Length: 162
Image (tube, rainbow, N blue to C red; front, side, top):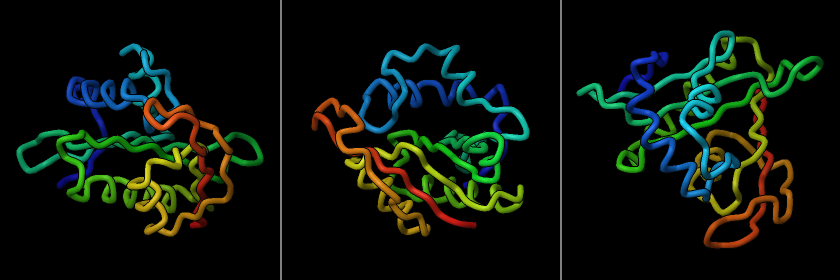
């Protein structure tokens, strides 16, 4: 697997799985009916932020990540990131590789930590991955997320120092 900076030519491969993940409504706080133009603007970040893709040996886009500062001003030294892996490619280390790249990028850019503002508590695979990478749950907003199957579930704020 290769992780590289995204190009506009990658968007047609990203959009179908991004749309499906968002429409499912069980892991991201984005509107389930997110339109393509808005999604592209939200995901395809420009420097100093960064968006990457993980590609297989045959060039297939396996997943993607976006990395950015979490807030502005006096909090601009804390980064954030979001990750999406195509459902047919989950369970093969793509998410871990993307998260490790985000942490590497954040360190190289001089950030002092990485914060995830909204990790759905019922997304146990993501929570477990982040915890294995040194993130901790700082707090949970009770019933902060309306899951399509489980109803109201907690929304974690997770953090890791760099």
